[in-house]
Structures are given as structure tokens and as C-alpha cells.
Length: 398
Image 1 (tube, one colour):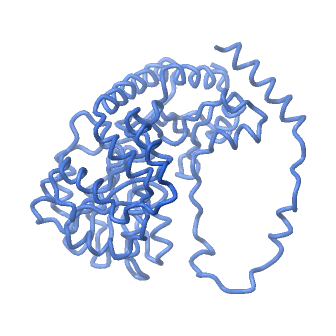
Image 2: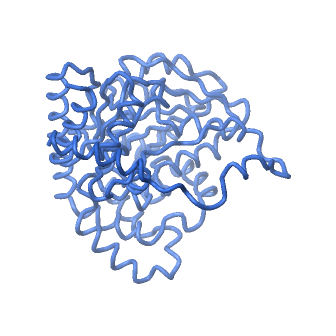
Image 3: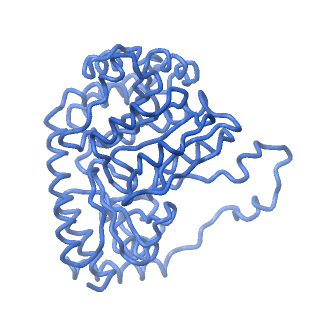
């Protein structure tokens, strides 16, 4: 494995040196031309979300064969979608010329039955990111406040800034949420509180009873957006659905996704769970036909494939243990994770990220999350995990 990685590094340097200069119109010509019209002033300082780099982009840049690159940067399912989902997607593609069901009727029905809710408790989004944006449309305006934890998902601050609201960032406790401090940060101006559990990017998970108390303590004028994108990776997750069923927590909105354990990240499908009156407000803002036909078909089938979900969970658990054992042996600090990724402290995270790419391994640098000494590694297949570790040892000289 080490000899393969060293050979790959040499080949990468050779290909990079021979790379042709890009053609077309120089981009700097466009940068010198100011727009002849005004845009929203918020956009002047609005950060741009930086996703994990796609395999094709790294292959083009470094001259590496795409099939020899592994991507462990975006917390995707290394097994891909289930066979049932893939078959349903292929079948649905035959009608790609038709508009999708604008209300996702059958998917809502199946999700509602699975969660023991009514369809009126559900809003579907193009990824749970869209649900986050819908909440911004519904709740935020200049003067409103949004409470987040220090190491929160990057989209929360972006949506806050987009609507001119004020971000209140609460210092983390052991890289996770300090729920008591977040509760103390809520003021009469607070409109939204974001809590991801497990948390992205740190993988930390709040204690069940602490989170339950927090849910009950958030005052009714503030909406608690509980991001549960990684909840299926927990063996015994806290079940807060009874809070929704009872109708007693209209300020609780839970968000989940088909991108992670279901392996449908490329189709973009997530959903929000909440009180019917709150969901009705979000439905007013949701774009028509926001869930495409392939996503609806794939999700319907994925919900029937419990074996795929269980296999994914087992591989993830083994992968986390593999990395934790390896990092302990190497003397590397890491954050114990409850999700499908792990943060490890490597010194100069950006340098390690760049050097790993040259070896055909894509991870995620954490400088944008104020964690410049860390990289985030998604759990892959056993073979991918072994290759990533070998590459990391090479880069660190271990």
C-alpha cells in the first residue's frame, strides 16, 4: 500500500508538470467589469458554501485517473444507494420528460406511516439544506437573532446572513453543544435556534436527557431547528417524534435527509417534521416541483430496504473503530464521533488535505470551521479506510 502511494505521488507530480494551460477567455477579464445594476447588499459579505471536492475536479486538476481517486470528504454512503433504490430510479428515468408529483404524495404517505405522523407534519426539500432556507424565509428578518453553537454546520450562518438576521454564536463545550449556554443566549429577539445532533462537523452527540430538557426549555417564541441528518447512525437515538405527535411543541422543527445513510446524496432530498401549522407556513414558500421524480422513486424504494441501512450502519461502526484505533496508535488527537465521519488533528490541515489529494485521497480541511489543524474523514469501505490511513501516514511521515 505504501509503495503504491509513493508511486502515485511521483506520477501525480509528473502529470501536473505536463498539464496543458487552460484555454478559453481569461476569467480575470470578467472580474474587471462591474455589474451595471445593484444587487442585494447582503451579498457583499455573504460567504459561499464550500462543499467537498468532487472526484472529477481533482482528477482534472492533478492529472489522476478518476477511478483511482477515493472521496472521503462529504459524509456520503460508501455503499451507494440500495439496489432497490437504484432499480426504482432507472425505472422512473423513463418518464423524465414529465413533471414530478409536485406534492410528493406517495413519498409523504410512506414517510408519515413510517414515522407515525400525518402527511401534514412533513415538508420535503431538495436536501435538508432547502428546509433550512425555508425556515429562514419564514422566520428571519433584520433585527432577528439566530443562536448556534461554535462549530455548527456552515449553512446556518449563511442563511442567517442572507436574511439580514444577527448570528449569536455560543462557545462549544468539548467541541459539542453547550446546551445550557445556548439556552441562556436566547433573548426576546431570538427567532431560530439550530442544534445538529449528531453535530456536523465535529460528530459529537448530546446526552439524551440533556437534549430532552433543552427541547422543553426553549421558549415558545423561538423555533428550535433540530438537525438530525445523521440520526440513523445512532444505535439508540433520542425519539422526539412524540413531541410532534402531541402537538404541544409547535416551535420544534426536526430535519432529516436521504443523503447520508440512504445513499441518495446526488438526488437531493430531505424533509422537515413539525406542527401542521408550522409546516403549512413552510409549504407556502416551497418551490413547486422541488423534488424530482427520480428522487421520489429512489426514496420510496430506499425506505423498504432495511437490510441496506443495517449494512451501512455496521460498516460505519467498524470504520469508526478502525480509525480510532489507528489514531491512538499514531498518537493523533481525534474527536469521538457518533456520525459517519471523524475529525483528526494533523497539524496543518490545509497542507495535509492538499498532499492527500496528490495521493488520490480527498478529505475535508476544517479551516472554514475555525479548526485549521484538523481534517474531517468520512468513513468509507474497509479498503478505502485502509488506503486513506496509509496515505495519511505517508503525508505525516509516520
